[in-house]
Structures are given as structure tokens and as C-alpha cells.
Image 1 (cartoon, rainbow, N blue to C red):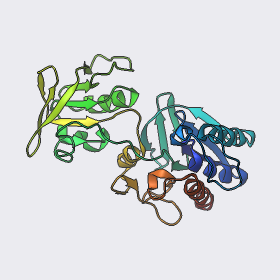
Image 2 (image 1 turned 30 degrees about the horizontal axis):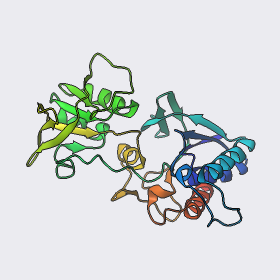
Image 3 (image 1 turned 180 degrees about the horizontal axis):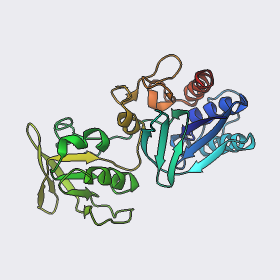
Image 4 (image 1 turned 90 degrees about the horizontal axis):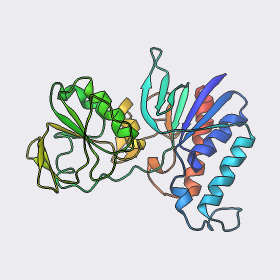
Length: 284
């Protein structure tokens, strides 16, 4: 039986999972890293056929319904997206790797980058959001990763294979990962990223600074555009570009929900999830 991996347990992800599972032809697994934007909604009262309820309750009911159909849910933080030798996608998490025939990215809208002076101005000039994409340009050079979790550690370990020194900058937050010997850690609060035509250093609020050639941003968990960049998925700004069947430019990888832009509503996410699920069945 073919395998489908759904990254994200919001309305788009669960909707796609339902259609895939009900086809009877696909083994479906949903990877979830906890509640998303829906759970933060105080009350949902503009959705067809339901009485007003909290977003958290709607999310809970939807997931319970999916589980009753036999859809498997895995708790984990997705940190990488790659391909095997047969060009089948592999989802890497902090708990292991999962192979699939098709993947749906439904992780919601991408997070905003931290408001650090110089970060936006130096994007593409030393500021990057994808270690596997840009590590080549920083061979034997000193780089840093901004972040405090498993995702930041994963990016740092990728860079450590080719870079000179790699330092994780937690920006005033205590690290939420186990320290490794080849990765340095600096917990000071950042004040700016410096450079004109390229990154030259970072400065901290305590008055100190550090010379670096590259700054990689890996705040929190890997968002939709972070995952997209890792495999060359086309973006439109901070949105994943899809066709009418919710497929990206990479065969076998689909996307739906808030991460494709447009109306950030449950109704739109459910529709796109259904469209993606049906398209994934046809693809398989």
C-alpha cells in the first residue's frame, strides 16, 4: 500500500488525511507538533453546520474523528525534508525519519523572522533560512544559527560538516536542546546583524560582538517555507506556490492551507485539504 505523510494536523492536513484514508488505497500518517493557529481562536461561529465553539474544541473533534477512521498521528517536530535514491520523499523529525510516496505540507502560515536590525537588509547577503541550501557558500567560514530548539541544532549540525566554527545564538533564551561538542552556544541577547554588501558580524546588547560570514535563521520549528526551501519548492513571497491540484513544482509534494496564502480561514483550509487529498490519490 502506498504511503502518504501529512505534515500538520490543522484543518487542511486533517481534511486531506480523511480523503486519502477513505480511498482505501493509502496508508496515512499525520505528523503533529501540537496545536496550531486554530486552537488559538476563541470562538468559531462562521463555519457551516456547527454551533459556536472554540477553535481548540473544533481541532480536538476533527482529530478524534480522523483517529476513529484509522489515521495514524505521530507527535514530532519536523526538521528536514529530503529524498532517497529513488526520489521518494523522506520526512526527518526529532524522533526519526519517515519514508513516503507523497507528502502534504500543511504547517500553516510561516512565522515572522525576529526583529533584529540588519536581518532583513542582509537577506541573501549572508542571512539565510536554509542550511542545506547554502552551506556550500560558507565552507571553512565562521557562521551562526539564530534559534533555541531542535530545529536550530539540526541546522547547526548540517553547517558543522563544512563550516569553520558554528555558534547557535539563542537570543536571550535558554537552549532547549542537548549541547554537542562541535557546536558553540551563545545565549546573549542580539542587538544587530552587521554588514553592507555582506554579513561581517553580529552584535549583542551586552556590548560584545562576533565576527561571522553567515547568519542562519532557525527560530522555533521548521515552518512551511523553511521546508519548501530545502527541496527547491517554488515560493511566492512567504507562500508556497501550488497549481490547481495543490501540487508544488516538485512531483509528489503537495501543500494546502494557510501556507499557500489567500484567505486564512478554516473553510479555505478544509477545501484545499480536500482538493490535495483527492489529487494525491490520483497521483498515486
